[in-house]
Image 1 (cartoon, rainbow over the protein chains, first blue to last red):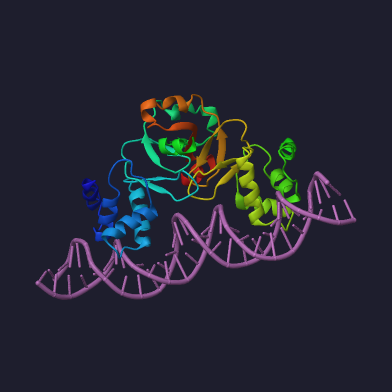
Image 2: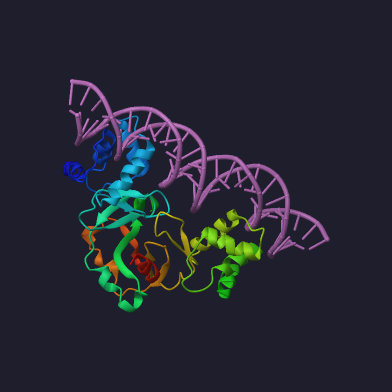
Length: 140
Length: 140
DNA sequence: ATCCTACGATGGACAGAGTCTAAGTCAAGA
DNA sequence: TCTTGACTTAGACTCTGTCCATCGTAGGAT
């Protein structure tokens, strides 16, 4: 992720402590934080950081394709730093936990031309839903 | 859709003019209204109907699996009365228009066991994104 | 090293989507 | 027709996110 900071600098980003902290928070695999969670973690290191800055920075990271925006439900969007390796998501219907998954097959090829209604289709997003192990246990 | 009203009555629903109007608004193919749009159309027939009632009724219809809730982006959820025939969605990234589509293949089979992380996977949701014909035209 | 200035940060108001609550209304069974 | 609990209502409230005016500062120019 440190190379993220490099790339951003290369793209003409003005490097500020706020942006650095947000980028650092979004580091690792299977990280799917909401904007508020990002703000909380960033504020742990840089107490004065404002919500607006976190939202702005996240939006920029998404625009630059450095971070993926994931809207799995009607609630808060989540931000996924694993934007360079294509993947899909597996979501727990109960607690909302998200895992990155890599299905086989190409869903794009599964949509016949006559089912495209003249659209220029550019993306497919697959969301698997179910119960995570610990939620499954508390049900039984 | 009139049989929806029958089914609901059979399930012990108290039939009110509000519920009837909401159910009537949600009739047809390729209908993907937001809660606010449902409210607007319902209010055209029953001016005093409140937003809360529309939300309550929609939630119940979703619980009863009579209507599908579709959260395609971070915006308002949409309600799809075509809940009995399995299908996926094709969404215009620009204007948000939705079409029901029927891809071939079974995405559920494309998720290997070792990629399930112990989850009990019950649903797959595939969302195709792109530009609808009219938005594609205004871009060029 | 210091100065400049445009880009970025701040916080508070605002907006959109949805939920909750307390009080009033009414569908439908007795 | 009466009764009652389920349903509806309006409006307050919450949550997520955006906007704006103002202030601060990164980093190039001197």
